[in-house]
Length: 114
Length: 110
Image (cartoon, rainbow over all chains, first blue to last red):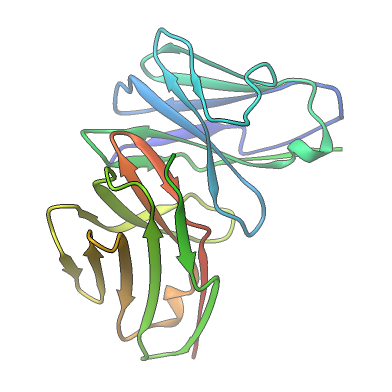
């Protein structure tokens, strides 16, 4: 299976600051990557689909100006949480799709906003 | 959009017993149904999947069944072991977009 890394694995920031999370595909050139968020003891919620070289496609209810996604290369997608607030504290997971269906998940980034 | 429901939310079984988790989906165009196992603080790991042209698939102690007409699919784990304890998620997909169920926390009691 594919290898996907995320950085950082855990970040604590103050309310009002912005945080960038990186998602890297280490062995595959992924034209499409996905960003999910997961609250404690809850399911993964798809936030957006990140397409290399074009704008991300956001799911309904996800603020594109708050969660900035950049997919500048085939191996890197970034998610920036702008003006973070405590309610943005969550586990953020990226994934890449290979072939027609299978997705491979990154290890996740735990964001804590104080 | 797709709506995936999963039941039960929590499940406790004795070691050696079987566990069954059920999911329903709403979009008849969904054609790929993976199951993931997620341990606390870790990434989801694919454990088994099934495509819409197949009714059942088995891999050792794990099996998945799919009823396209009723739009539901189930995960079956036999001879459960303590290391099976985790949160399990079903998902439904068409193309590359995945929609996850709400998860089932499985506890296997030694």
